[in-house]
Length: 493
Image (cartoon, rainbow, N blue to C red):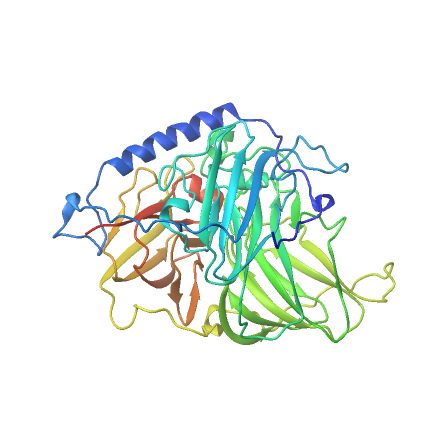
């Protein structure tokens, strides 16, 4: 297979490698609740997108089937405790193929990718192909698109890798993402709209040494501004020890070697569970070329912020020899930043890399202009949902329109509709909202994940209902998702 593999010595411990009994029971209860919710068709409440002429008896539309062609590329991923590294306790993390991030999967646009996932964990798991509009049966959401993969079992995912872009894959069961079950997926263009000499994948992640738990499971409760670590934006936050670049902490940073004069495409992936990063590169300006894998008109910036699940590609011209720091600050946490080193050929490796200066031209969504617009969303929408994002009272609960998933009404739409979702964030924290199975328009950009600012921030997205099935729409802060901030988008006719 045409793929690259992250070195196992780039990995660090994530979790204690044991199955949390309480967590496993809680996940089982949530799965049962979820299955019951999907079996019962509830009427929509409080949404302008209600279907009065269909009501609760609308017949679900059959999803498109996955490809029947033989894979052009095939790979097996094994999810198991431990990493292949002598530097850490290999029982203290869960990983794909013994490394975190997992192996880089790299295919050509339009090729069929087949992935056999083997579950060597002590609990159920799945894999979601974040950002790729795959057919519904291989989207990897337990209780929505598939039964979870039991311990000792395998599941075959097969889909056509399109469109081209920077994506990633991760577990979609409970809090497993924060144990290290994630990896990059690159679908290479056949005709890129920008020139570059080579590309480099940069995966940012928040580093949790112990087993992930919801605040409600630790006795922290739902109070703001403390608990598991607090944070600058007031949310209860896991006790992260630091932030990783391709599996390495700043004490042992990843080095990106460059040659003077070359153009390097950096594929930045925010694979964190609960962190918004502000990214800067010392001594160089970045030309942003893609947002969430989709091409944009190149725009220069010396920094950008992105939330969990977002991706940006940037071309950097290597015209300033030396050693330089690539830094990602946690904008909603107080941990030390993630740091890597950009090093030119021939520069003394013992030289101290220069740190980035304060940003002056931070990228905003308004700076992004898609190269190609989305089809099917011209004019006024056929259906509009007005949704409120907020925190529930009492225990640690996050809601959409006051409902906590899985005990939440589905959002029902019809095939080929132009759908609009308007979100108002009544909480004080940012929410990176991700839509499975579709790209959407936000402003003049095409994306699949968007940050909704806190304190009554508002964001509107538009998409074309062109991929029938049941799709999760949720906050990609893993703890907000697991505490209820999600809905199922359901195609009916």
